[in-house]
Image 1 (cartoon, helix red, strand yellow):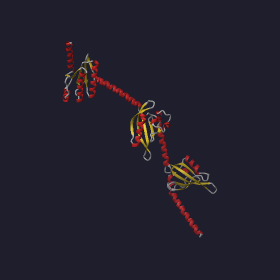
Image 2 (cartoon, helix red, strand yellow):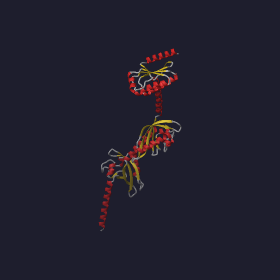
Image 3 (tube, one colour):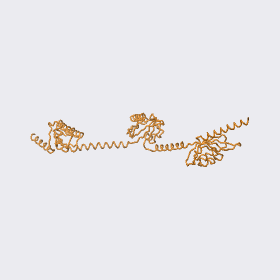
Image 4 (tube, one colour):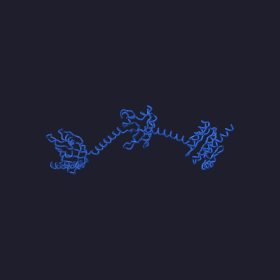
Length: 403
């Protein structure tokens, strides 16, 4: 009976061993037994795979075959031990048999013989290569970002959902005369700008976070509490979390103050030049006392006709002229609006007490005036400027004789 029970017990142990063996073989983690000289005396398929060898080929090889000197030192320190019950967790770098370099998180559990001497260790190997490489990439990218933020002259900043600074470039801290970037953390534009700029900037950012629509290259006028005015070209885009929720904005602003001032100065110069050209293109000539003439050359539009009218009427009053000759022989055609303006100018001359003479009326202009049905009553017209001048001379001679 006892023998029968022993057989059953042995059979039970055999089944349990088979189940443990199957469990170990199917584990996704590498598992092995290392002898006291770090020789593999057992390894499961996952462990063989981690070390880049075909199944069963790890047996008899040493861990030292796969490790760099630094990792080997770490492995010996944590696996070969005199301390009973010591369990170590550490990382090693493996030059695998398939040519790949892998990083393993290693957990060892030492074993001792009857005399208390170290006999070997059960060791788990977890492949953490992807995690380590990801960490290295993140460290590298963080280094690039920090290098960018420390050197780029543009103002780069990251803000949270309440438009508070959470990370900024050194150039932005310098822009605000803050000693370090940490001095900006948690603050907003309202801490550095007047309401005139801070309010619309805040509203832009809130709109970006609400709609997800970025703004690109917006020219902004920055007004500072000390009275300074600066100009920047700003681009702002929404920031998202892993779930796709908007959690803030990323912005980059480029100082264009000098460019803006240069453009404004250039525009002033161009405007002054335009004014000079207009004056030159609409000269009012004092022919002799009491007689003015306006020779119009080139194209004539409503704006230029209006300026001619204003300039002529002003000078008639200032010079107390009694005759104004408007010569349009230098233009070939006018539209209806310009023709109407010329006739109105001539009539306005009469209203300020002078005689208006229109000379150089060509066929096309005459036809335009006729088609418009403009009243020419009381307006003196001559074929040429020469005829107009002769008429004025003759008129003055007559007046002198009468006097």
